Length: 236
Image (tube, rainbow, N blue to C red):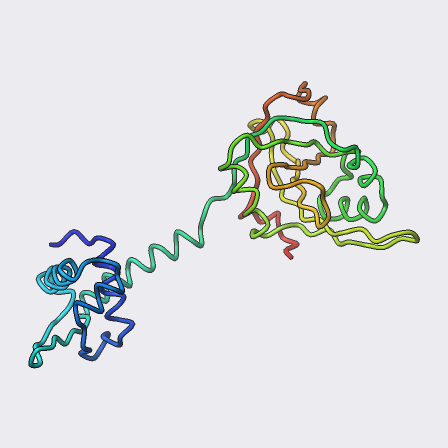
């Protein structure tokens, strides 16, 4: 049996796109080579390999070849699709972050003191956060990329509000634990309005994270964030 490689999969997909699931369709190696970004010789070889293992059927019509996907070939692709879909939908339960603690701008304590936020934190997180946020500078590009993608996952949403003087933006909360469960009920905040870029995490907890962990500015810290957890039920 042929070792089904990416180019074989792309070849089958191209035939399917042309309507070759049930009917014979015209497939030229020139067009196929362009579609799968391989040479014409390679495209011809892929068709031969797929025909030899019974994944496609070919007929000659004059100088042209007509191709259709067999039930065996379609079953193989359908099974592969199911595996990919399952892997995408299940995904990881957590995303890991590592960084160093740094000084913030001092705004966290002020915002944590506002009733418009405090009540929602109490209702949705189950606690009023310790005044201020812990600021974590991410140490590697992989963590910065993960920080950028975090907003795509379900969150606990804190509504923005307005008081007599100004409007305050919303926040997305992602439940997290710190330093291998040393603190289990923290949360990472993604804010509508922030001075920070994707290299920074702002973290809250019901306690002083620095005092609880005995850490200071410059120390390393690790976090794991729940992204497929039932607790993140109030979803934006």
